[in-house]
Amino acid sequence: MRVGTPGFVPERLVEARAARRIPSKKALATLLSVNPSTVTRWEDGTSAPDAEALSALADQLRLRREFFLRPVCDSDRPLFYRTLSSTLVRDINYQEAQMHWLQEISAIVGHYVDFPVIDLPDVLNGASYKQLRDEEIEQIAVDLRRHWGIGEGPCPDVVALLERIGCIVGSIEMGTAKLDGLCSWSRAEDRPHILLSTDKMSLPRRQMDAAHELGHAILHRDVTEDELKIDLKEIERQAFRFASAFLLPSTTYPYELRNTSLASLLSLKERWRVSVKAQIKRLSDLEILPSEHGISLYKLYSSKGWNREEPLDREWPISEPTLLRDALNLIVESKVRTKNDLLAVEFTMQAGDIENLANLPAGWFSKSGEIVKLTLRNISEAPQNSDMASIIQFRPVR
Image 1 (tube, rainbow, N blue to C red):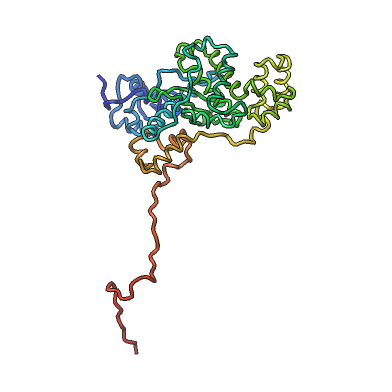
Image 2 (cartoon, one colour; image 1 turned 90 degrees about the vertical axis):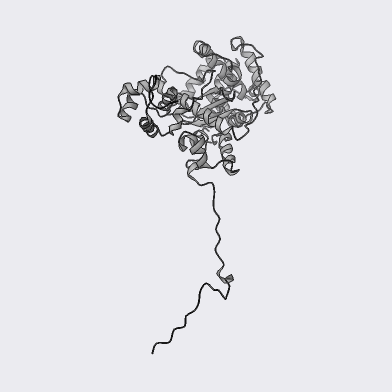
């Protein structure tokens, strides 16, 4: 039998520690001045913190006490992210915890606001991703463009499209350039949530990352955890192929290619908002670019230092998600809930976490949503004969 606070959810402590980038149970124990075995028991559920310890946890992790009493917003579907062998586990855990918080914010806001209807057609018609051929991915990308009415030219803002078709999108600083984004279908809403990185970001990279996560939402919604572990490389390849085909349709983009020089690809980048490096890969996939020429272009590309930053990368503003931000503004402006209500009753994270994930301006919660209007009294309109005061005559001093 557990002792301590009734209803304490151990998984929430694990999630909070990851979200605050506290690397180990021992590190958290040091911050709390408790024995590491105590934190271990809290996290594995064999015991729970008492009221005083729970308050200390909440203060240290900058959360409300109620945070630890609510269930984790997880999903029975896998979380898609590009795992690299050099990626630190704590970075991946941080990203996963932030995804759970994005889903929690979305679920709360969804109680008050109707999000756009989910418009992600079942393009596989019951088939498995394992049966997908590259030409089918190419056709799916073109068909979806037509379905969503964006034609076959450049797609200027993939993030805005994602929100229009019912995806919830957040963007945060990951603290590493090795994690670009992730996608997960939430259990509560059965809606795809996409979290994008802001690290070393440019518009072409944001476009490709967003299209890549869209590929997961479309092609891999029924993939299991085991399949993801076994076939991660192929699943990632399919998502990238879809993103490339979606941003650079085979029916139009290749016909604008004058030649295969870096200068020509840079000119196309200005129109299509896709990096030169991604265009080289796209032309190789379409077998328009011979492999030897592709290798030469990559070498020239690297020698120019474009691996660090390409020309035009700073020319365009980076597209940002607006759906959650607009929804929270609507809730407050319509006086359904005040900002204080939202923080004290609905949300269990601190204001900065919500502002970050919902793309709200820093300090949004601290700015009063209600202004009492005052007017200056017009003294000239005061009554001449007032009973509120009288004039006393004084005799002149002699």
